[in-house]
Structure formats: structure tokens, C-alpha cells
Image (cartoon, rainbow over all chains, first blue to last red; front, side, top):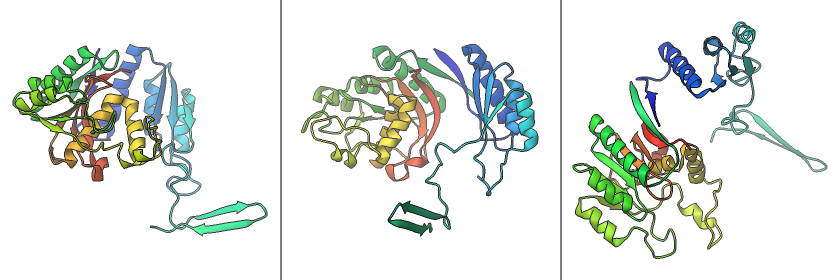
Length: 126
Length: 192
């Protein structure tokens, strides 16, 4: 089986986004695929995706909460509403590849064992 | 830029080998690539490759000596001679992803994947197929041996068991800078 593969000259950018969604839509139709998972930080790509993939289950995966700074979410409320209005599902969860091992210098790690005590360590840069 | 990618129905096999070499040759000509790195165990694919890529630098990467049993080499002497007669270079060296940490496995059993970095890289690349893992591994081995440059694009060909089923255009990197390796194009692979 032969299939066309598109290579962009540069990574990222508005044009690549439009082209990526169009190419994915075409291939989804050819293969009868009805589930699409799309990464989106601020939500711009998410809104484009829910509009592009009408009739599909569209899962938008945002950055984990607190990615940029504690207690913030980069996906705007406005974009979340636009996505959900169109039936898109927003998933915000631990990054699969960058999870618990991503501790930062200055973070404190506490390990407690009942009846023995607590070991407290401050993470420093190696 | 658009390019054709060929997906084989199943991994491995004679037909996929012939097709992989033909597709890789065509893409090498289109891109002006003159260096081809090919994995070969017994040497059948190696002989086909040196015949297919006349005028190119063809590096054949064999299994490490003692892979199947100590003090043996699966690449036959007959095939080695045929390869070298046609100007092919045979590289037999430590596997880039399955090196010294494999010594921790129990003797006389096939080494199980571990949490060692090489095994994790290998298992991750196998999500694209065994041939993709092999293609990137032999690129790294050839770079470590100084047989390919790390600032030029080459074509790497790997397979699943016997034969070839995966070809990629890539810019190699040695083991110490493995994550600088860049896969530029996928010419063909099994659809798994």
C-alpha cells in the first residue's frame, strides 16, 4: 500500500496547523477513523480541530495544570467553552513522558514511614 | 513537500526486501544520497544491497560476533566475500542499543528488555516496527565507527528477522549524541 506523506519545511506555524488538520481529516475519512486526539496549549488548535472534525469524537489534551506556573491553566476558558460547545472533550492530566521525575531545584521531597519518621530533602541542581 | 511512503502488509519477507531496496534506491537517486547503511544477519540482504546500490558507499552492519552462540558469526564467509568484492564495507561491532548491560541477563537465555537506556530506546522505536529500531541502531553504529558522517543525510535499511522491510532517510549521530539523530523521511515500513 502506498500513501502520501507530507513533510513541512519548518516545524510549527499557522500554515502547518491548517494543513495538518486538513490532511488528518482526509486520512480519517479514507480509513473510517472516528476518534481524533489533538494537543493544544492555549486552545487555538483545539477550536480549529473541533470545527474540522465534525462527527468525530475529538479529545483535546491540554498542558498539565501548573505547567507554566502554579495554579494556572494555559488553555483559556473562552477556548474551552468553544471546544465543549462543539462536543469536544478536554483532557487535562499528568504528562505521560514528563511526570513525577520532573522535579525542580528548590522543590522539597518528604518521605515518611510510620513509626520511624520523616526524611526531608531539598532538590538541588546536579 | 509531499513524498510517497510505502506500507507493507506484513513485516519481513523476500518480497519486502526487493521492494525496500528498490524504493530506497529510487529515493537515494532523487536526493543525491550516496551512502547507504544496511543491516544483514546471514548476508543475503547484504549481497542484494551491494548489487542494488552500485556507485554508492554501502555499509553492511552484521550482528555482533557471538550473538547466537559464542565465537560464531552469522554472516557467512561466502556472503562477506561477495559483499567485499563489490566494494561493500562490513561492520561488525557492539550493538548500540544492546551493549554491556545485556551481561546482566541470566546466561543461556535470550536477554529480556531491562530499564537500561538502550533497551528503552529500542522498545520505543519498535512501536514503529523492528526495522525502524534496526535502521536507527545501525546508523549509530556506523557513525561510531566513522563510516558515515553526522552532518550528511544517508539512507538506512533494516528489517524484521530476515530481509529488509524499512528504509529511512536520516542524519546519523553516534551513541554519545544519539538524540541528535534526525529521521528525515520514511521511505517504507510494515503497517504492523
